[in-house]
Length: 399
Image 1 (tube, rainbow, N blue to C red):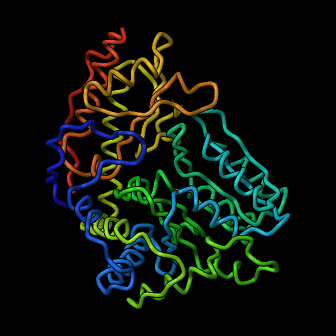
Image 2: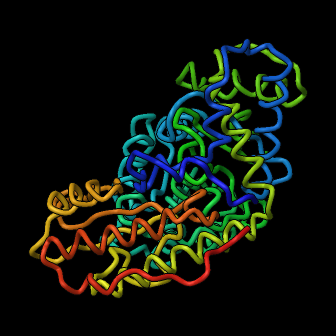
Image 3: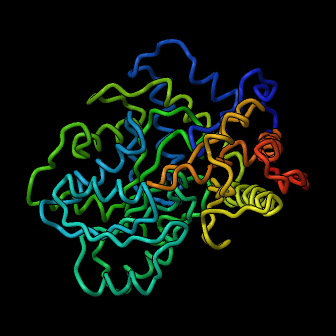
């Protein structure tokens, strides 16, 4: 993968939040193409390629991608509306704000939700999940691979293995919005049934596309419904022929696709897959390790309470008691970096969050270095002297 990126010569701040992320110049150019009909053969080719490339990114041979205009949250609606019928049981594993939101969405569509909540910075022990699976039959179990509120990485493989052992008919649903193309996930090998994600994070393109990949098992559950899908726009029965037609390079209409955003996503997927996914995962792991090393030098701690719980796509960092997020973030922006504050209820002021996914992790563009320097300087300006030793790096990961 090329390491060039002209927009690194910038007069604007780096966007180093946990998404939207920085994008390559070629992706930005693809997003700014002239008006194009959704029936144009050039667009049909791009859309068909997106569907095919998404299978490679998540590791499936026959999973069905749904690529629909909307945010990552729309993927929750897609999953709940199509796969859950009124009164069915759903087990939600919540590691933070987004796990709670997914539970709320499931309840909105009539699910009877059991929510296993972890303390901030932790995840549920596998034994607790196994006990829940033995106690009741669930239509779905949902797991947020990276909860963006905490930076905690879930054990998706461990959860999927438990489902296979204790309740093989249960569908495994992964919220991968802040994980897909950054964290390891092997859809077919692990036995995942649904991955929900979006265009604006490690997929490296502008916001505006809800991406869901559903297994054939999930589609068979949809086909066997006893009741109608209680939605119009997200009804997969309407979208499935659209996806199949575009993959065959034959445009078909249900709702107008987001043409430029799909051009941009296709460009970004091409860049990602110019290397192997194993190298992409390794680059994110190496970059995340550098960020965590800097956090240690600052004598701070991650919200995730152990190294194996830390995401490779983003890092949430507790601030010293004397510093609030509102003190730090403006000083970061003055140094050319936009970071995010916390979003956990009652604790939002106590921590900040950095994104390091997509080209920030996989290219030698200096984005992460600049961010770590800015954080160290801003912390020092806020009175945290331990940050002065902060930045340095070894050779960058290259794809």
